Each structure stands twice: as structure tokens, then as C-alpha cells.
Length: 566
Ligand code: ADP
Ligand code: MG
Image 1: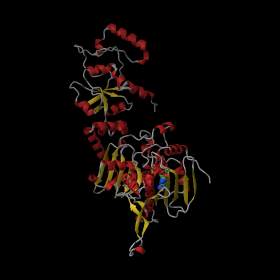
Image 2: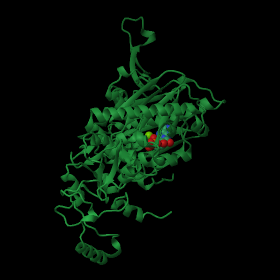
Image 3: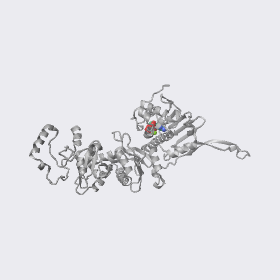
Image 4: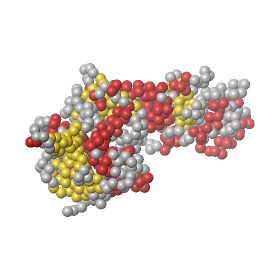
């Protein structure tokens, strides 16, 4: 039989799994259960949308069978199954959601955390098994197939005998070592615990085959009855989706577990919002503000969206209409009985109901962020560090239509506080004679502190915002002002400062004839690099500074000059 090779990333990941020293090997069970649940979701959805198929709730379940004699652990589902080609595609290559954009091999080996970060999915089975068998029959196909792999050197696929749709994954557990007792995963109490911990809210019953004993029927009435063992199924999970539960019954840990179970993220979320709305449009939602930006967040590959359920059935994994772009980092689920199962993409876009939900989500996330900013600044700064750039883009995106709403979420580094401040805080403590909100742009705070203009303004005891990100100035340019106060770059010609000397003459008037000649000579020497050389009354320790004629800072002019002209 032909042995097929894994695609190169898969092989690397597999090597990593096989040799894993990762202590949290137990997550393999969560991964396999979540795949099983996804597979049932898919077939369930099919039966609900296909008139020829009927649905019988009892037909859908996940079954775990620990077999101590053979040292195998089997996870079986009655889901959609896989065709031969799908087996090849799905188990021979890293799934896209599992990220094929891995770091270099070296980095991977050093960083075992990737298991936590990406949720490696199916391959995690190889952390505990040295041989994995998948027997599967796709729902629309007659023939079943068996996929077998004993590790990174490849896999085989051959026809099988399974008659019903679904998949059965058999793990042949590794030999025990000093550090790892793999037999542990065959203990019913251990499996029960793992399922309760990681997979409690899976919506289909997760059954475990357990051994029981009973008196043999025929010896029931005798004086020394004989016992026999028999197998039965125990349901291990509660099955009620967390969003249907009452907030008061749930702990932060429950919310965090759900976040991880659903693979919404692998970080620790900073906050969650649980919505339960009854009315013309009824729905429930759980939303998370993640603690870390996903690795692809600031790239084109990132897709925003929430999981959308219609009465408990997943109908869309990333419903983007539910989130405004500036909150694209929000993760979570929305479930509504009022949304039809057969909803198509085009229809969704226009769906008034979705807009209603989306507006609500927008306002609740705003509230949550405001609360965090006021009550837990440290967490808010973490949030801003991860997603602040998205908020900034939001203020100038779409011609700045959302700037009023978003400006209060911004944080900038302050010369006065030596930390991040809001515009509100800045403006509230402005001295009365200060006209503008001053900002300096450059690549680092230490560089900015050396600017002559900065010391002039600091001398006045005014506060300066240090803008070190290229996009910061797009923000100030779009906002133009906060409240009544305009933004002003420290490299602007007019800083709106009163001259430090007694005589309040304007700069030009102070220039004597003698100076005129000197300035003209300077201009001649510097040439076209500058437009004009003039004197100023503001300098103290420095001999000169650069300023611009318009509103833009020097950095901004340079950025714009390097951009392609359209
Ligand atoms: P992910 O679940 O993130 O897509 P996995 O590595 O866990 O990545 O799984 C890879 C793919 O293999 C899945 O996307 C799915 O198509 C397929 N698959 C895995 N397990 C099953 C299963 N029990 N039934 C059907 N398909 C499965
Ligand atoms: Mg998976």
C-alpha cells in the first residue's frame, strides 16, 4: 500500500507533537471532541436545510471508549465524515484555521507555547499516541476509508467497512515513561474530569463507554448469584450552551473555558459581555475582548466576525456584519431563534435583524471599554497595547465618521505623566493660558524629548503628547480638535506661545537689518532644503529648530512624500 507524505508544515508540527515535552498533553481530548462536534454541526445543518433528510436527535453523539486491554482510546462521532479526498486534504495538511503561517522550525522548537496559541487540532493526538487510526464514512458516500499513521513519516488510506456516517478515531497510546503515564487517559474518572473541564458545553452528548456489573438474570433467584459485566453509556457533559445559562450561575473560569473550548482565542480574555435580550428580536450573545491580538490581526488575512447560531445550530462561523471594523477584535457567539437557518450571505448583509444586534453589540462593547478605562486602567492599557491601532484606524477610517465616538478610547504617551493618557485627561488639566493640545511626532520618546521645541513647551509647563506611531498623526489630522482645543504639532510655526521677553513683539519685528543679512546668507547656504530662515524669541538652550509652514509635522510631510502619488 502506498505511503503518502505529509505536507511539510504538517510534518514539522507532527514532529513537534511526537517529541512534545508540553505538559498540557491532555488538551488532545478537547481537540478531538471539538472536531467531532464540528462534524456533527455540519451534518445537523445539512439535515435541517435539506428536505430529503430527517433529523433524529438521538442519532447525534460523541462516544469515548477507553479500552485498557488494548491500550486504545477511541473517540467516535456520528458527524459528516470524510471522503477519501477529504481525508487526504484535511489530515495530510495543517488546517487553515490551525495556521500554516508557522514561525521558523527553530522558533517552533523553542516555543512550545504554540500549542497553546494555535490550538493544533487533530495532530495533538500524537502527543499521547504513537499510532492513530481514523475510520470514516462521509454522509453522502457509500464507501468508508481508514487512515493510519504512525508518525511523521507518512500515512496510508485504504477502504474500510464502516456502514454509518461519522468518524472513529483510535489512539494507540504511547508507552509510559517516567514523566508520563499515558494509561491515565484510560481511566474513566480522568476522562470524565477532562470532558467536564474542557468540553462541558458541547451541545451533543459526549458518552463514555463504562463497564458495569450486574447479577446474571438466570442466577437472580439462586443463593449465590453470579455477576456479569456489561457496557453502558454515561453522558459526561451538561450540553447546555453557556449562553443559555444565567449569568449568576457562571464564573469567570466558565467564561474563559468556553473561550478556549471554542478556540475563540488562546490568550486570557480581558473582559466578557453576556447579553440576553428578549423582545421583538430575541437573542443571546457572549462577547469577549481578547488579551492579545491574534498573530495575523494586523494583516489582510484576518477575518472579523462572530459565530452565529440559529437556535443552537451553528450557521456561520464568522458573521462579519455583527461587528464594526473598529471592534473587529471582538470574539464570541450570537444565538437567535429569530434568525432563519437558511439565511444566505447576500440576505445576511441586508438583514435588518443583524443590524439591530450589531448596534447593540457596538454599544455594549463601548460601555465595557469605558468601564475598563475608568476602573481598571492597567487592563485598559493592555487592551490598548493590543488593539489601540485598530481604534486609531477607526477614527480616521470612513472619512472620520466615527471619530466622535472613538476619540475617548485613545491613549497617548504624555510628557507630563510619563505614561498613557486620554485626551479628556489632557484637556481637563490644561492651564488656562494654554491654547492648543501639543504633540510631537517621531520614532521614539527619547528622541522627542531632545527636540528644542519640546523644551520650549515644557518650560511653559504645558503637556506634550508624544506620537511615536506613523498612524498617530492621521488621527490628530482627522480629529483636528478635541472639545474646543485644537491639536498643534510642536514643529508648527505658530505654537501660540507668548514670547518670553517683556516686549511682546512678533518674531519678524525683532529681526534687525544685520540679522536680515545673516539670515539671507544662511538660506543661501542651506539652499532648497528650507523655505525660509528666521529668528525666534522662543529658543533657550538650543540654537535652531525646524518648523513647518502648514499644519503637518515634518514627519508627516516626509511620510506623505514617500507615498505613491495617486
Ligand atoms: P480545525 O478543526 O481547526 O479545522 P483540525 O486539525 O482539528 O483543524 O482538523 C482538521 C480538519 O480535519 C478539520 O477541519 C475537518 O475538516 C477534518 N476533521 C477532523 N476531525 C474530523 C471528524 N471527526 N469528522 C470530520 N472531519 C474531521
Ligand atoms: Mg479542530
